[in-house]
Image 1 (cartoon, rainbow, N blue to C red):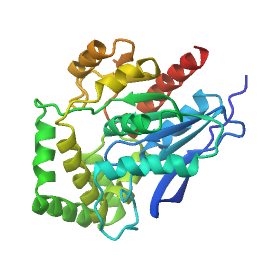
Image 2: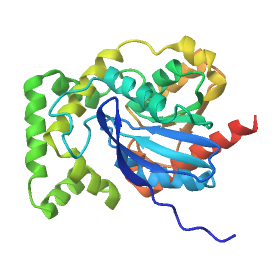
Image 3: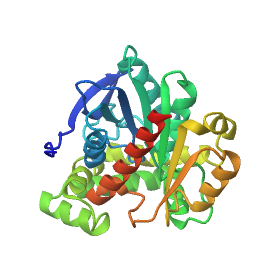
Image 4: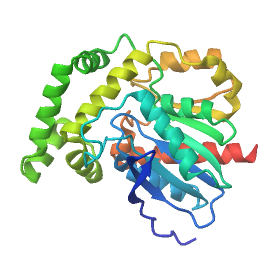
Length: 304
Protein backbone atom coordinates (compact mmCIF):
# COMPACT_ATOMS: atom_id res chain seq x y z
CA UNK A 1 0.00 0.00 0.00
CA UNK A 2 1.25 3.45 -0.89
CA UNK A 3 1.23 5.74 2.15
CA UNK A 4 -0.87 8.71 1.11
CA UNK A 5 0.60 12.12 1.93
CA UNK A 6 -0.71 13.45 5.21
CA UNK A 7 -3.74 15.72 4.90
CA UNK A 8 -3.11 19.14 6.39
CA UNK A 9 -5.53 20.48 8.97
CA UNK A 10 -6.94 23.86 7.94
CA UNK A 11 -7.59 26.71 10.38
CA UNK A 12 -10.68 28.85 10.06
CA UNK A 13 -12.74 31.25 12.15
CA UNK A 14 -16.38 30.39 12.65
CA UNK A 15 -18.96 32.55 14.47
CA UNK A 16 -20.70 30.57 17.22
CA UNK A 17 -23.44 32.47 19.09
CA UNK A 18 -21.73 35.69 17.92
CA UNK A 19 -18.32 34.65 19.32
CA UNK A 20 -15.35 34.27 16.98
CA UNK A 21 -14.23 30.64 17.32
CA UNK A 22 -10.94 29.24 16.03
CA UNK A 23 -11.30 25.82 14.42
CA UNK A 24 -8.71 23.42 13.11
CA UNK A 25 -10.25 20.82 10.85
CA UNK A 26 -9.88 18.14 8.22
CA UNK A 27 -13.06 17.33 6.35
CA UNK A 28 -13.50 13.81 5.04
CA UNK A 29 -15.09 13.41 1.63
CA UNK A 30 -17.25 10.52 2.82
CA UNK A 31 -17.32 10.71 6.61
CA UNK A 32 -18.99 8.03 8.69
CA UNK A 33 -18.12 9.96 11.87
CA UNK A 34 -17.29 13.45 13.07
CA UNK A 35 -14.61 13.58 15.78
CA UNK A 36 -14.72 16.76 17.84
CA UNK A 37 -11.61 17.60 19.88
CA UNK A 38 -12.10 19.84 22.94
CA UNK A 39 -8.81 21.35 24.12
CA UNK A 40 -7.59 21.70 27.66
CA UNK A 41 -6.65 25.11 29.06
CA UNK A 42 -5.20 27.05 27.23
CA UNK A 43 -7.92 26.22 24.74
CA UNK A 44 -5.95 26.90 21.58
CA UNK A 45 -7.02 24.60 18.73
CA UNK A 46 -3.73 25.09 16.84
CA UNK A 47 -1.82 23.15 19.54
CA UNK A 48 -3.61 20.01 18.29
CA UNK A 49 -2.46 20.18 14.65
CA UNK A 50 -0.26 17.04 14.70
CA UNK A 51 -2.87 15.17 16.72
CA UNK A 52 -5.77 16.10 14.41
CA UNK A 53 -3.79 15.11 11.30
CA UNK A 54 -2.59 11.82 12.81
CA UNK A 55 -6.11 10.94 14.01
CA UNK A 56 -7.57 11.63 10.56
CA UNK A 57 -4.92 9.39 9.02
CA UNK A 58 -5.42 6.60 11.59
CA UNK A 59 -9.15 6.57 10.85
CA UNK A 60 -8.34 6.09 7.16
CA UNK A 61 -9.87 9.41 6.12
CA UNK A 62 -13.31 8.01 7.06
CA UNK A 63 -14.00 10.66 9.70
CA UNK A 64 -13.94 14.45 9.71
CA UNK A 65 -11.87 15.77 12.62
CA UNK A 66 -12.37 19.23 14.16
CA UNK A 67 -10.64 20.88 17.14
CA UNK A 68 -12.75 23.71 18.58
CA UNK A 69 -10.88 26.49 20.40
CA UNK A 70 -12.19 28.19 23.54
CA UNK A 71 -13.60 31.70 23.16
CA UNK A 72 -10.91 34.39 23.39
CA UNK A 73 -8.00 31.95 23.79
CA UNK A 74 -6.82 33.27 20.46
CA UNK A 75 -4.45 35.46 18.52
CA UNK A 76 -6.97 38.27 18.07
CA UNK A 77 -8.89 39.87 20.93
CA UNK A 78 -12.26 39.60 19.15
CA UNK A 79 -14.24 39.86 22.41
CA UNK A 80 -12.54 43.11 23.56
CA UNK A 81 -11.07 41.85 26.81
CA UNK A 82 -14.18 40.03 28.04
CA UNK A 83 -13.43 37.05 30.30
CA UNK A 84 -15.19 33.69 29.91
CA UNK A 85 -15.83 31.11 32.62
CA UNK A 86 -15.60 27.36 32.17
CA UNK A 87 -19.41 27.22 32.23
CA UNK A 88 -19.57 29.65 29.29
CA UNK A 89 -17.00 27.56 27.42
CA UNK A 90 -19.20 24.47 27.95
CA UNK A 91 -22.26 26.33 26.59
CA UNK A 92 -20.13 27.42 23.64
CA UNK A 93 -19.26 23.81 22.68
CA UNK A 94 -22.93 22.79 22.91
CA UNK A 95 -23.85 25.78 20.72
CA UNK A 96 -21.15 24.81 18.23
CA UNK A 97 -22.53 21.28 17.84
CA UNK A 98 -26.11 22.51 17.58
CA UNK A 99 -25.18 25.14 15.01
CA UNK A 100 -22.56 23.41 12.87
CA UNK A 101 -23.56 19.74 13.12
CA UNK A 102 -27.32 20.19 13.41
CA UNK A 103 -28.20 18.51 10.11
CA UNK A 104 -25.28 16.15 9.87
CA UNK A 105 -26.02 12.44 9.48
CA UNK A 106 -22.76 11.36 11.09
CA UNK A 107 -22.39 10.24 14.68
CA UNK A 108 -20.27 12.53 16.82
CA UNK A 109 -17.32 11.29 18.86
CA UNK A 110 -16.12 13.73 21.54
CA UNK A 111 -12.46 13.74 22.52
CA UNK A 112 -11.57 15.97 25.48
CA UNK A 113 -8.06 16.69 26.76
CA UNK A 114 -7.37 17.70 30.39
CA UNK A 115 -10.18 20.09 31.49
CA UNK A 116 -11.58 19.45 28.00
CA UNK A 117 -12.46 15.96 29.32
CA UNK A 118 -14.65 17.55 31.99
CA UNK A 119 -16.19 19.89 29.40
CA UNK A 120 -16.72 16.94 27.03
CA UNK A 121 -18.62 14.94 29.68
CA UNK A 122 -20.88 17.94 30.32
CA UNK A 123 -21.54 18.32 26.58
CA UNK A 124 -22.23 14.57 26.31
CA UNK A 125 -24.74 14.89 29.16
CA UNK A 126 -26.64 17.66 27.36
CA UNK A 127 -26.59 16.12 23.89
CA UNK A 128 -26.94 12.42 24.63
CA UNK A 129 -28.87 11.62 21.47
CA UNK A 130 -26.20 13.25 19.26
CA UNK A 131 -23.01 11.90 20.84
CA UNK A 132 -21.96 8.33 20.09
CA UNK A 133 -18.92 8.02 22.37
CA UNK A 134 -16.52 10.02 24.50
CA UNK A 135 -12.76 9.77 25.09
CA UNK A 136 -11.03 11.69 27.90
CA UNK A 137 -7.26 12.17 27.49
CA UNK A 138 -5.14 12.86 30.59
CA UNK A 139 -8.42 13.99 32.18
CA UNK A 140 -8.69 16.77 34.76
CA UNK A 141 -11.96 15.86 36.50
CA UNK A 142 -11.39 16.96 40.09
CA UNK A 143 -8.83 18.89 42.11
CA UNK A 144 -5.71 17.14 43.31
CA UNK A 145 -4.93 18.46 46.79
CA UNK A 146 -1.38 17.05 46.61
CA UNK A 147 -0.41 19.09 43.56
CA UNK A 148 1.84 22.08 44.27
CA UNK A 149 1.36 23.28 40.67
CA UNK A 150 -2.42 23.33 41.03
CA UNK A 151 -2.17 25.24 44.33
CA UNK A 152 0.13 27.83 42.71
CA UNK A 153 -2.07 28.30 39.62
CA UNK A 154 -5.16 28.50 41.85
CA UNK A 155 -3.51 31.17 44.00
CA UNK A 156 -2.61 33.34 40.97
CA UNK A 157 -5.97 32.77 39.25
CA UNK A 158 -7.99 33.84 42.32
CA UNK A 159 -6.14 37.15 42.55
CA UNK A 160 -7.20 39.72 39.96
CA UNK A 161 -3.97 41.64 40.61
CA UNK A 162 -1.68 38.62 40.11
CA UNK A 163 -3.63 37.51 37.02
CA UNK A 164 -3.19 40.95 35.47
CA UNK A 165 0.50 40.95 36.38
CA UNK A 166 1.14 37.53 34.80
CA UNK A 167 -0.86 38.54 31.71
CA UNK A 168 1.11 41.78 31.35
CA UNK A 169 4.36 39.83 31.61
CA UNK A 170 3.15 37.39 28.94
CA UNK A 171 2.17 40.22 26.57
CA UNK A 172 5.51 41.98 27.21
CA UNK A 173 7.40 38.80 26.25
CA UNK A 174 5.09 38.49 23.24
CA UNK A 175 6.10 41.97 22.07
CA UNK A 176 9.83 41.17 21.87
CA UNK A 177 11.70 40.15 18.72
CA UNK A 178 10.49 36.79 17.33
CA UNK A 179 13.86 35.06 17.86
CA UNK A 180 13.96 36.16 21.52
CA UNK A 181 10.34 35.07 22.10
CA UNK A 182 11.10 31.64 20.63
CA UNK A 183 14.17 31.28 22.85
CA UNK A 184 12.16 32.11 25.99
CA UNK A 185 9.30 29.75 25.04
CA UNK A 186 11.74 26.93 24.26
CA UNK A 187 13.59 27.42 27.52
CA UNK A 188 10.64 27.74 29.90
CA UNK A 189 7.78 25.88 28.24
CA UNK A 190 9.02 23.27 25.90
CA UNK A 191 12.47 21.86 25.40
CA UNK A 192 10.74 18.83 23.88
CA UNK A 193 8.07 20.84 22.07
CA UNK A 194 7.61 20.64 18.32
CA UNK A 195 8.26 23.67 16.11
CA UNK A 196 4.48 23.92 15.62
CA UNK A 197 3.78 24.09 19.36
CA UNK A 198 6.46 26.74 19.93
CA UNK A 199 4.98 28.83 17.08
CA UNK A 200 1.49 28.52 18.53
CA UNK A 201 2.66 29.59 21.99
CA UNK A 202 4.45 32.62 20.51
CA UNK A 203 1.47 33.72 18.37
CA UNK A 204 -1.56 32.85 20.50
CA UNK A 205 -0.58 32.38 24.12
CA UNK A 206 1.61 35.42 24.74
CA UNK A 207 -1.26 37.90 24.48
CA UNK A 208 -2.77 39.83 27.38
CA UNK A 209 -6.40 38.81 26.60
CA UNK A 210 -5.48 35.14 26.10
CA UNK A 211 -3.56 34.87 29.36
CA UNK A 212 -6.30 36.68 31.30
CA UNK A 213 -8.83 34.21 29.89
CA UNK A 214 -6.60 31.20 30.64
CA UNK A 215 -6.34 32.29 34.28
CA UNK A 216 -9.98 33.33 34.64
CA UNK A 217 -11.11 29.99 33.22
CA UNK A 218 -8.67 28.22 35.60
CA UNK A 219 -10.23 30.06 38.56
CA UNK A 220 -13.73 28.91 37.56
CA UNK A 221 -12.48 25.35 36.89
CA UNK A 222 -10.96 25.11 40.34
CA UNK A 223 -14.20 26.35 41.95
CA UNK A 224 -16.26 23.76 40.08
CA UNK A 225 -13.85 20.86 40.50
CA UNK A 226 -14.10 20.92 44.28
CA UNK A 227 -17.34 18.99 43.58
CA UNK A 228 -17.46 15.29 42.67
CA UNK A 229 -17.92 14.35 38.99
CA UNK A 230 -21.40 13.17 38.00
CA UNK A 231 -20.79 9.47 38.62
CA UNK A 232 -24.41 8.54 37.86
CA UNK A 233 -24.05 9.85 34.32
CA UNK A 234 -20.67 8.17 33.83
CA UNK A 235 -22.14 4.87 35.03
CA UNK A 236 -25.17 5.26 32.73
CA UNK A 237 -22.87 5.67 29.70
CA UNK A 238 -19.94 3.56 30.85
CA UNK A 239 -19.85 1.36 27.73
CA UNK A 240 -19.42 4.49 25.57
CA UNK A 241 -16.65 6.15 27.59
CA UNK A 242 -12.86 5.74 27.65
CA UNK A 243 -10.18 7.51 29.67
CA UNK A 244 -6.44 7.57 29.04
CA UNK A 245 -4.30 8.45 32.06
CA UNK A 246 -0.60 9.26 32.27
CA UNK A 247 1.76 7.68 34.79
CA UNK A 248 2.98 10.83 36.49
CA UNK A 249 0.24 13.37 35.81
CA UNK A 250 -0.84 15.61 38.68
CA UNK A 251 -3.92 16.79 36.68
CA UNK A 252 -5.19 13.24 36.32
CA UNK A 253 -3.45 11.09 38.93
CA UNK A 254 -3.87 7.32 38.93
CA UNK A 255 -5.94 7.58 42.13
CA UNK A 256 -8.65 9.15 39.92
CA UNK A 257 -8.41 6.18 37.54
CA UNK A 258 -8.93 3.84 40.50
CA UNK A 259 -11.96 5.81 41.59
CA UNK A 260 -13.52 5.63 38.11
CA UNK A 261 -12.93 1.86 37.98
CA UNK A 262 -14.84 1.49 41.27
CA UNK A 263 -17.69 3.85 40.36
CA UNK A 264 -18.16 2.78 36.72
CA UNK A 265 -16.44 -0.57 36.16
CA UNK A 266 -17.36 -0.84 32.46
CA UNK A 267 -15.56 2.38 31.45
CA UNK A 268 -12.52 1.63 29.25
CA UNK A 269 -9.47 2.73 31.26
CA UNK A 270 -5.89 2.82 29.97
CA UNK A 271 -2.56 4.06 31.28
CA UNK A 272 0.02 5.44 28.87
CA UNK A 273 3.45 4.21 29.95
CA UNK A 274 5.52 5.38 26.96
CA UNK A 275 6.71 8.52 28.73
CA UNK A 276 4.53 11.05 26.93
CA UNK A 277 3.30 13.90 29.09
CA UNK A 278 0.05 15.65 29.97
CA UNK A 279 0.83 18.11 27.16
CA UNK A 280 1.09 15.26 24.64
CA UNK A 281 -0.17 17.45 21.77
CA UNK A 282 2.90 19.71 21.93
CA UNK A 283 5.19 17.17 20.28
CA UNK A 284 4.88 14.70 17.42
CA UNK A 285 5.57 11.41 19.25
CA UNK A 286 2.92 12.19 21.88
CA UNK A 287 0.40 13.30 19.25
CA UNK A 288 0.95 10.17 17.15
CA UNK A 289 0.74 7.78 20.09
CA UNK A 290 -2.45 9.30 21.50
CA UNK A 291 -4.07 9.54 18.04
CA UNK A 292 -3.41 5.82 17.64
CA UNK A 293 -5.03 5.12 21.02
CA UNK A 294 -8.15 7.17 20.18
CA UNK A 295 -8.49 5.63 16.71
CA UNK A 296 -8.27 2.11 18.16
CA UNK A 297 -10.98 2.85 20.72
CA UNK A 298 -13.27 4.25 17.99
CA UNK A 299 -12.68 1.23 15.74
CA UNK A 300 -13.33 -1.21 18.59
CA UNK A 301 -16.56 0.60 19.52
CA UNK A 302 -17.77 0.60 15.92
CA UNK A 303 -17.44 -3.19 15.82
CA UNK A 304 -19.73 -3.61 18.86
